[in-house]
Image (cartoon, rainbow, N blue to C red; front, side, top):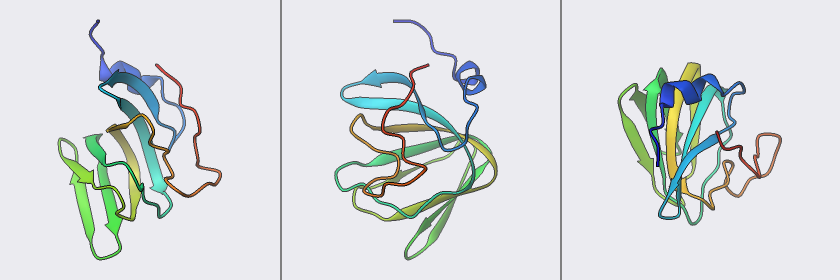
Length: 119
């Protein structure tokens, strides 16, 4: 048990759309990531995801609407809901999700991260 400085962890993230694990609890992982640009449409059949925005503004597209999440705000994307994150400028976020969650859901492509670094 020790204090985790999230701002220091963000300094260790050098690639967009590449989450890093900073903590685990009760089968959940706490991850930090930097985002910029558009991600892919995807869903997670078995996992809910919580996106907490630390810096910037994230647009979350759903098939029926779009939500804007700003610094200090969060959104939970329920399992099975197709979504696409978009960061027009650099975004720093914290993700809370089950350890089994693959960043691209059922999709596999150049953005898929099978294993994540721990920082």
